[in-house]
Length: 280
Image (cartoon, rainbow, N blue to C red; front, side):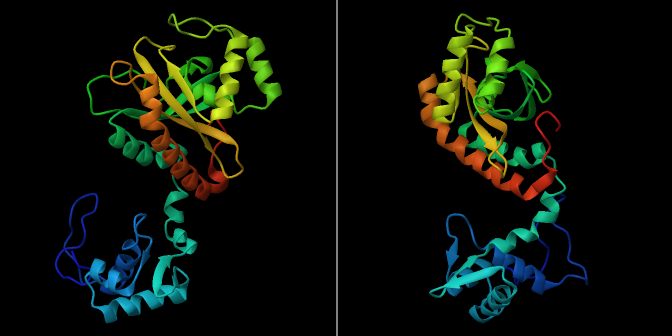
């Protein structure tokens, strides 16, 4: 609906609501200008903005120049772009959310993009704990749910986070870990696991091919806080009959990394509210 139209307001969680006498149309128009910018088109001309918002060019100019004066919009060569200060508008809401709540919309988008199950997990001692999960639309399910704990060495979540540990902490983990076989492919030798973790550290991702469960393949990348510390990981899991390990890397690695970056940007806005691993 054009920003200067009349009738019902935009749909919210409960659907459209009739506009009351209180409705401030100029606020609606100002927000429409901000929402006109997208990741695909981060720079717009005045004519672009007018077309996208349904305003006249003169009206669009007034709102854009107001946002420019307020510091929410910048301009170069008659093209406009959003400035970082626009993030202040969303910070009060984002700052009230937990880490899993922040991550879940990104996991949902990734799951829809790949039609695979996605999850977020944290390292807690020698285990990983699933703190957010979005299932694929297909019938198959691994049976893993939020709150599930698994031995870290068995999973992509665990390996990508173990690989990020300081060497002394990793040495201590390997010295005390009880590496039990779950399938014929499970790595149970500490030195072999160390080599796998070093490869994971170098590549920036972990791939587990039917070591946790026959027929299950998964891929994970780390999620870091603003200081660069690995605080979680995001993964994609599938069936080996659907994708081989190599196919999963080819299909999912770039989208996984993109999702991790999106989560990292959001948790950076959470600041000190982000909990240490295991305390979500």
